[in-house]
Length: 256
Ligand SMILES: C[S@@+](CC[C@H](N)C(=O)[O-])C[C@H]1O[C@@H](n2cnc3c(N)ncnc32)[C@H](O)[C@@H]1O
Image (cartoon, rainbow, N blue to C red; front, side, top):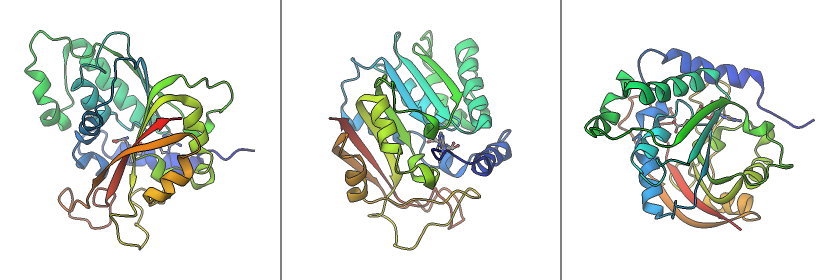
C-alpha cells in the first residue's frame, strides 16, 4: 500500500489554519508574500504557452493569488489554475477569497496591504484566469495516466514538509503531472545551520535540502536551470524556532 499523508498530520495543518481563520497570519504568510511572483518574473519564463497551472500545497493561496494578479501572462483568459492542499480549512479560505475577488473585489482584511496595489486598478477585471481549489493530497496522485496535464507546476514550501513516507515518490508524481516547468521552494541546507529545524506545525518535520539533494531527486525528470537563495529572515516573528526564519532556496526546474 502506498504511503499517503496520515490524518494526524492533516489535522495539524487544519489546526494552524483554524487558529488564524479570522485574524492573523501563519508563519509562512509572514514572509514576503510577493516572493513567488518575483521569482516567476526573475526566471523570465515564456508563459504564453501556459494554459494549465498546478499549485501543490497552495495553503490559503494568498501568495499564489498575488503572483497571478501581478502577472498578466498568467492572469489571462484561457488559463486554468488549480491549487491543491491537504487542509480543507486552507482550501475553504482560498475558495472564499477568489469568490470575493470575482464578485466585488473584497480583499481579506488581514492581507489588505498586500492586495492594495490592485485596488487602484480601476475598471480592470481582477481575475481573468480561472482559479479553483480542491482538498487533495499530492501523495495520492497516481503517476499512471496523469498525462503531464500542467505546463507549470508550483510547490512553494510544501515538499520540504511532505509526509516522510511519500517523499521519495514525490518527484515521479510531479514529473507525471508537469510538461514544462516546475518551481520549487524548500528549506535550504546551504542557508541554515546543520542542526535540524524545529517543527512549526505539530507532527510536521522539516526536510532541509541542498542543491545536490534536489539534483539527485529530480534530475531523472528535470534540468535545474536557475535558483534564488532566500536568507534566514529574523524579522517576521520574535520566535526563533519557526519556519519563517529558516533560509529557503527556490529552484526553476525544466522538464526533460
Ligand atoms: C508551509 S505551507 C505553504 C503554503 C503556501 N504554498 C504558501 O506559500 O503560503 C505548506 C502547505 O502544504 C500543505 N501540504 C502538506 N502536505 C501536503 C500534501 N501531501 N499534499 C497537498 N498539500 C500538502 C499544507 O497543508 C500547507 O498548507
